[in-house]
Length: 379
Image 1: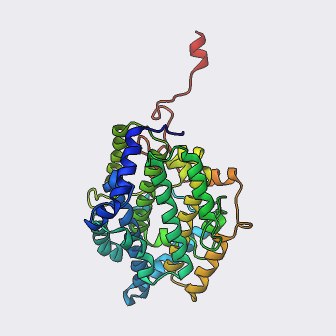
Image 2: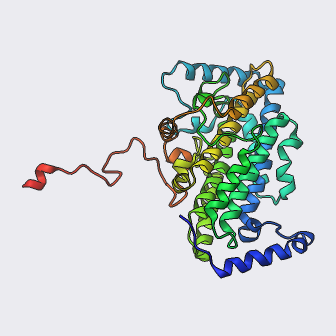
Image 3: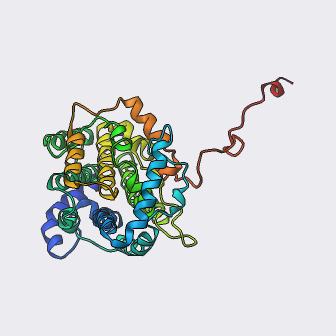
């Protein structure tokens, strides 16, 4: 839905651009997003810091002499998954009891990661988080950095009242993103086999259910914010309320309840499920974002699997496959079938309205949509 231009937003955008140097020098917000939605911008910066920290924790766990038992448990779990027919990276939503093979390691590091989410990081710190960690190869870092900048630009366009033709501006941003073929992912869905059938598949989710769930909670907020901002209303107070509600739902997801984190997503949040309006209005944007999500998960799989002999080579293969624009692509219907198989609730629920319980394995009566008894109607 294209939003109409309002004088108030134009004035705000112009004034902000004029004041940008002064604001930056005074340690004030230096982007339109940070000015309009400071808490959301804070979480976006924390995303990169936390994701990079999660990768570091995975590597440190694998390198630890105390991880031998966890590695054996992970191997057994992965072997059991491989024996199951029709396994496609989706679960029944039990969080694998949130007790992975490295549960002691996860329990130790999770509180620190949750504390990091609440901290205020600069744009520069977030942008360099993966590069500073030194874990990923330069091309992988460049792909993630370019993807982050792409999503930030899409959001800035959507809240900038000075841009009258937002669709044209978004299309130009997509074209600019794709112009760097080496460090961009295609606007068509990458094959689900790259996620669920590569040699290290499931290692991240099965080995680290709390860390993967925490990562997916941040993915959910990113999609939810895009859904609300891009397809939202021109009324400032309604847009503010929508973003505030999304942030509140996110905070609930990452909060401990009775000593567990039962509200974390158990499946990968995707645009058609969390942000269907974004997917309908800007399909290429939504698909690129989903590809970036899958790409990062597969990199985490490579890091998490205990038996990878040459991780740099394995990650190089992942980069080559995901940046390939001719091969390893899914048809749109196959992509939709794959992402919907994970379930709406398991992916964190839709951005608009939220979801308090799973839609799976429930009767029609429970869903308030019972079958109509035709014979009874005819009496």
